[in-house]
Amino acid sequence: MLDSNTTHFTNPSTFILQGIPGLEAAHVWISIPFCIIYAIALLGNVTILLIVLKEPSLHQPMYYFLGMLAVTDLILSTSTVPKMLSIFWFNSREIDFSACLTQLYFIHCFLKIEGGICVAMALDRYVAICHPLRHSTILTNSMVTKIGLAMMLRGGILSLPYPFLARQWPYCQTNIIPHTHCEHIAVVKLACADIRVSSYYALSVALFLTVLDVFFITLSYAQILRAIFHLPTKDARLKTFGTCTSHLCVILAFYIPTLFSFLTQRFGHNVPLYYNVLTANMYLLMPPMLNPIIYGVRTKQIQDRLLRFVSLRE
Image 1 (cartoon, one colour):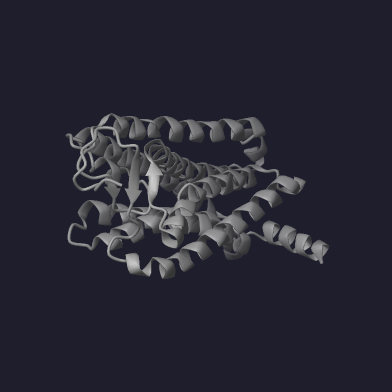
Image 2: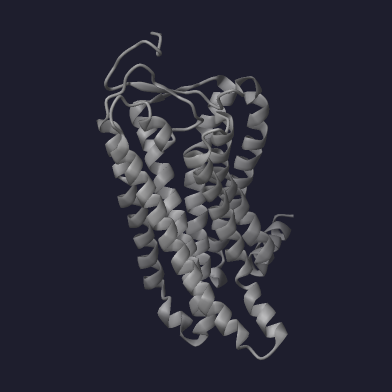
């Protein structure tokens, strides 16, 4: 193989994923928690999806959105972790140029879809609490399908410029990506060109969608809290608010790691590179692992179906 530090090219056939720079000697040990997190994410989300699909009583908007979230988490984690583990275990660092851009697209697309599903779940909680008698007429199966398609289109269309812009830049001198996956900025920084279009587009879309999603979620919960405070008894208020806790935990599990990674990437110039890489992996891996646990622990209907399934297997 030619020395990637001196070879010049404009359209690389492959990139080299470095893994976690500075921690290469510990890759095998680092792979253990990553593998456990991925296994929990796979098992949890497949279980949630099967329960929602097979149990007729769960064919309701909230559980449809939960099924969408499970599918999104499965795709998001599977698009990154297998290649990551192959780097840690087999030192398989090469990734085809087109495959790298495809992975980049899938990451951004399904992160945006997941954010949209959080908004859809907030809408469901708002209608269920503020307009309970109209819930079934507002959130019909047709409406839920349209919301799901809108979230997919939002993620798919807004993420298309990422790989298209990255493909048009000329690359030279090195094809080594200091990351475990094809992270957008890490890829375009290798280009021998002015990449401000890519950088500004990524930043503006991230800020716009985050502000928009948080605004609608906040607006929904402001109305929800207003309705809860008008309930006559404390028990009624606590019970009603309890129906929102799973969704609130999912929101925190999604936005806190994402915000933390965004801030370290943009402003943590004195932070070690391996720290930025680890935080970027956490915001991709933690929500897929935590979401099924949150809903499995906090949602009685899912607990009951899971216990029934386990008892039948015995």
